[in-house]
Length: 94
Image 1 (cartoon, rainbow, N blue to C red):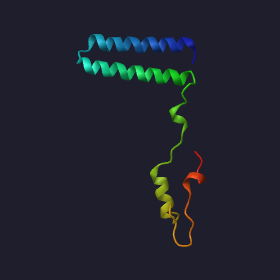
Image 2: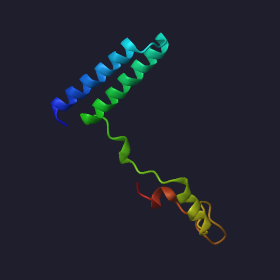
Image 3: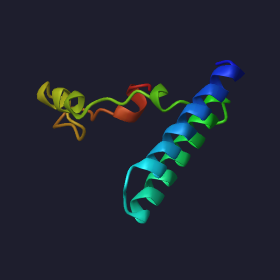
């Protein structure tokens, strides 16, 4: 992302936040919460843009139905008589 795009996005977010604060009637506490949420979101976004904070979408999480499907096939987590249990942590790489 170029520096110009970064500055434009920050200006647009700042102007939108100013417009909301100036022209939409809200309780002071709600405006404060809105400002804090927007500032935290912008800081997290900036940390991701500069590579300080990794992307939240990089990790792959398996849904719970994946584990349930393994149990239906007789490969439960605890295992049965004469059957070794499946170690999900070491057999699946994320």
